[in-house]
Length: 294
Image (cartoon, rainbow, N blue to C red; front, side, top):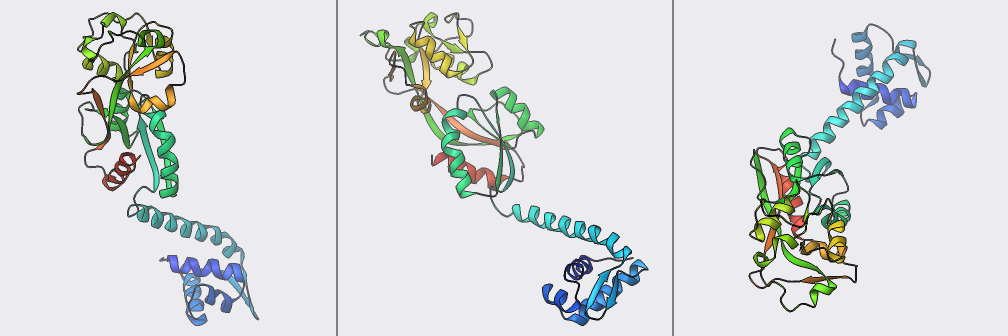
């Protein structure tokens, strides 16, 4: 038995119109060609699909049983074509993107509308998590790409730097009046340095930039969000390093002041990371371009 997609399309057209001539016009073939293919389909199935009446074609019980199956075959074939087409269209179809918490709130509000307008076929699924968690998700395939600070933990990954992000010093308004504020991050007193909780890459970056070590005792306060950390600073409990991209979103407190360091100013590099050998290389290149253009 050999039932073709063409025959299924003729069956569906004829069932919908109830007329050989109109069905033939719908599928852009001659009426004899359509009639021949329907007859061949009936021969292959060993039963009649339509009752032929003058000017009409009505489904038989067998035809009524076969029709939804033929429609399903055509829908499946269309889905296969759509999936194949997505492979040639950058940033279309599902994309699972992981973003670290010290980047997500500051990049996504600008990035998401841009992607929605430029790539309406993109079905973006977002996950916010720490670098170590996203590293495991990327390797396992739970996410397709990650936006994080570089360098990213070792693995079968490729990465592309998309932007630089300066570190600034966040202090209370009272501290900002001091003339002896450190001009270099390594001059910050470890006991005054407030950090995000363990697991956040920004914590390690702050310690590294300030020349401190995990063994140094920073202030006995840790936060899981930049907003909480800045509230602690505003209360005069210490100082912290603030990524420049966070300034517009996080600084609305009159009790806070942002102070730049002297040159060369410390910074982090934000990158896009994906699996080596991924079929989404073209998607990664295009997404990196959008992030860099923000």
